[in-house]
Length: 520
Image 1 (spheres, rainbow, N blue to C red):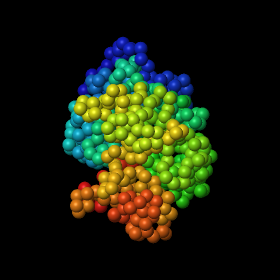
Image 2 (image 1 turned 45 degrees about the horizontal axis):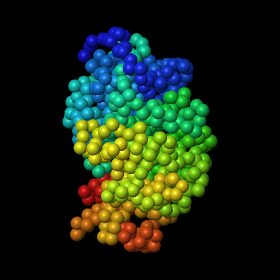
Image 3 (image 1 turned 180 degrees about the vertical axis):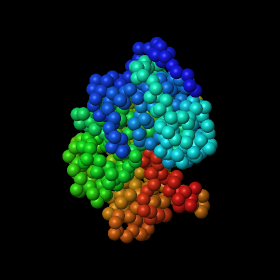
């Protein structure tokens, strides 16, 4: 593909709708000489250079046929081009699809094919992942973020274009991305997320994160870190990139770069709390630590509040339902020492209802499935109308999460419907068990999961990372759980491990734990 395009061809008639990308580019244009990105290698990118790269890439992608309704898939690490290329695709009206590093090549190939990828963008620093993917699927066009063995050099080709502004072709109902679920229980589902509500949702992303915020992206830009990067740019802030999460490197970057904002899943907060370099690190610049994505231990959250100060912002959300609840820094002050941690109160504009298995509302404090009605809800699952109809009913998202509301309006997540372990006598909620285990002084990290026993019934198993120099035995753990939760919750199996493996987005990977233990 060699055809150049003209400004007239790119600047198609505007719909009158202002996308999040246009808003970000407008902020960048206000102070073009201001550094807004620091790469993992320490290179700084100014606002003007970043803005111009978006326009140049948009013009180049348009020449490859990318436009409204097409799909651009990205297999990339945390590099500036992962953001500028996504902005460029969205500006042209195309949807972005993120191929998470760490997913099985077969799964990545299935995703790339299922979303009708028109152009695949490859990170040349990921040659093995790219090779594995391309051995299984070959989209019409493959381009590379720089010279590499796979596809033409997108950046070199984009540099030929003048950075003239490109008018957005996207409309409010168009997908800005298809975000795939973590895939811990099977092939990921593609959640369609539209432009309309996305910019409004970003307004919550940097509250209390400093003025201007300085965000450390130490988890993949393909997930929540990318959303917070968008919010940071909108707030006039800057983003520091790291290749991946390493607790020592994160602490060093916080001190060196004067980071004000971190996004961490709870297991990553625990790793920071346990790192020997924490006590000697200057954390005075940190204004906000946003967490979420999986269940959190109240014991560990209380420890985090005492260690980091009043900077924790928790919440609950789903790709399908958007942002649902928030819990602010001061509310962490009274976090219980055991039991469950609340995910906060429902945010304005969102409705939450709790229903039982028959679809009837439950009394206040009763456990049932959480249903959400919100303008942030997905438009549906990609090419899965039956599943969409099952989850989206009468304007409500059926989350598949079990929880309850207390008399003060705080929401508590008990478990995923699919993560319940059905045992003789009832249901074991794995997050409740994990919360309890993390109060035990000999348990540093853990993951509870169900396994089929000899009689084909489910049994409770736990993988545990012991605290340093604290020996742990199954009977000791069984007695502890039995005292606090009863015999039904007592684990049948204890698996001592050196670490709890995480999914590519940072959640405990229970599918991988089972596979590692030789059980499927």
